[in-house]
Image 1 (cartoon, rainbow, N blue to C red):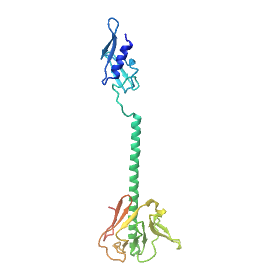
Image 2: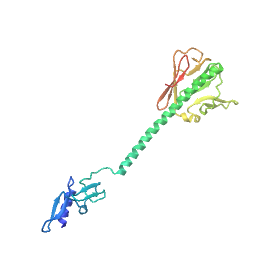
Image 3: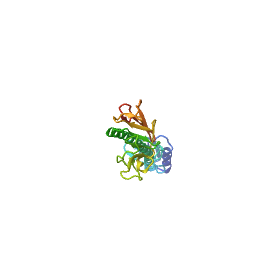
Image 4: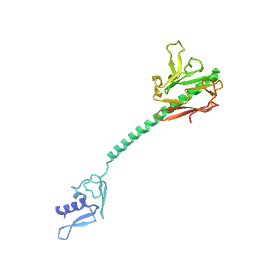
Length: 248
């Protein structure tokens, strides 16, 4: 037989114990309730205890499994994060990481694209000098762009090769009046906005053989460099003698 006092003893023993116990309620030969420890635990007598994580309750002759929502107190429960809370934290971390990871590649892409464009335009100047048998040149306009001349000693600008960023319309002249002028501040160069340039010499010129020379045709005794900057920097090298243009 089982009375209320025995049940309360079981509840108190389980709910305030730090280690799990297996308990069986029985009766002696006179019918009085007796409390035995270890053989069996009846979960239905523990309805005043709080819910626990999954706990396995074993007896000698049977086995019962108690789920998270079963009315057993914290002899196996430990406070912690729920699954939803853990997932939310992981989602927030993933979003923050994605913002950082995505932003940096875009900055690198813009810098790399601008560097490739400037290097390609320098090679274009070299080809102009060879094809026209003139001293073609690129004149830097501050740190925001440059102009290309088929003949560095003559005023007319080179005709635009068709790239929108390299196409400046001179409305004071009759067509063809689209010239090779790059200005990273203008809307036509919006893909390169914020990019700046720096070089030790304001002019890069090539003779009719494609060899780097000064603006007046003198020899170049060292490599020339153009630095492109946008949240980082890349350097373009124009080798003396050969005129090879490279991005290290």
